[in-house]
Amino acid sequence: MMRLNVKAFATACGLIWGGGVLAFTWWRMLFGDHGEDDTFFSKLYRGYRITPIGSLIGLAWGLADGFAGGVVFAWLYNTIADRMPVKIEI
Image (cartoon, helix red, strand yellow):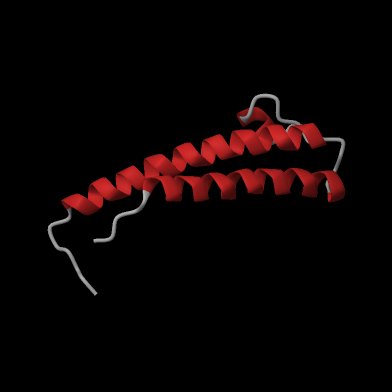
């Protein structure tokens, strides 16, 4: 079974999640309701607000969070893949 490259997978997850938080913040600033600033991300990430500086804080938190989640997922996937009794080669 194919193994995942942990560093590459974690980096991709971090970039996707961090970029998503950044895009969400700017979307919300441009088109969203400016009155409500209490979002899921503001409860999850310390210092995050729907502001330009908050988008950078969210990007940093998202990069770290996505990277850590990617490491755990890739490690778990590789561990399970190594223990599979049947290996299918295509």
